[in-house]
Length: 496
Image (cartoon, rainbow, N blue to C red; front, side):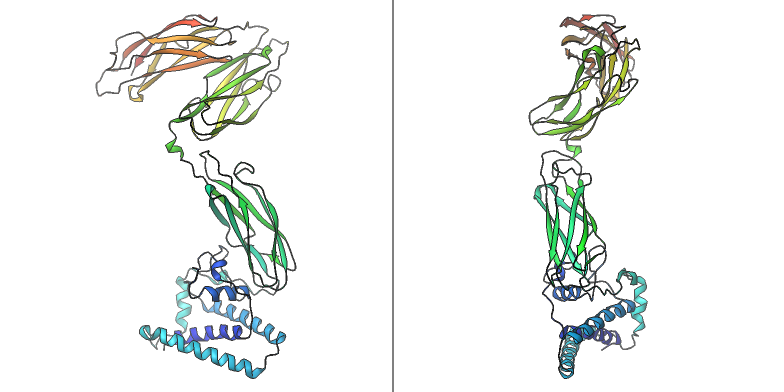
């Protein structure tokens, strides 16, 4: 038998000596450390020695059952074992002869076991004990990973790991807390759960409480209820903290942990047909109007619930012109439009039109469309009349790249946005060839109250021909709702 094997027998025999005179509550290592397989031959041994405070794992909550051990770590291990034996010797009346017999029997049994298991893989006799020290140079485990001896018999309390995770549709997350380095007496420790990126009441149920460990008890759990919504969103986090230990126990690391709630809805890349955006490119309202409702739409699949956040920010306007607002909008299944309101403040001053920036963010159940940031213009009623308005092309000439495969044409409503008005639009020939360069397009734009700029799209044909510069004629027609057309009512699209 090689020297290294003999050294292992000495170490393990020392552990058995201590256990021979000690009675501990049953505990499995797999219930404490995430990398100890349940039912493995060392599962019970790791659990018992950990409950006695003789061995500890890493701060990550792992034990490293296959890691190498250094001579320095063995020294710490044996010191803890010696302290445990001394305590047992003081508290128990076992005779010296009985202890010696127990130790001799344990050492003899262990030596026979190790010899039989290593006959086929005998280590050569010229292996020096110092090799153990040499191999520690390449070990993942450093001396610093072994905690110093703990004299607190009530124990140290911590989470098993500092990062937990749970799938949103699992319903509950089970959080494990362990008591190490001592297990004498009853102790308690409080836990508190707070928002990270997750929101209580939306993503999980807010909770807090107290964990109670009975005498010799070394592990416990509590649960966090998870809310499974139908909104596709990023993974969300919850913060968990231990505090206020009692009964002589102390906190050790990690006493703070993070729970990640993994979303189970489809990802953003699968939601290209679920757009959420403002209903218009621009909005206008008279300062005397009192308020304006801003419409938000979703385009495409609306079969599931969706959410989006909105906010206002000063452009040239200040808080004296309107009341800033922000919040969250919810689309129920099948619902394609919803809105929020902005309160306007009228004054008697001639100070011109003012602008407010409107933004959408954090969509759930869809992705933001191109109209995610728009402008509201508050019209000064001292200098501007305000009615149903007039309609025109936003510009006389438009340009679009053929490679983009579409051209966006903007139409403006000026002089007022009261009431609902409509206007027709269509392509009207030109030097470009229909079906070869573009798709003939016609339709109707609807401007709701407050909406001052909208758009329609002309599909383009992306071919390999060098035919840039061809033009498509555009026209507006048939306004309704009291609106009138003003120049330009005709425009040109040049395809590049």
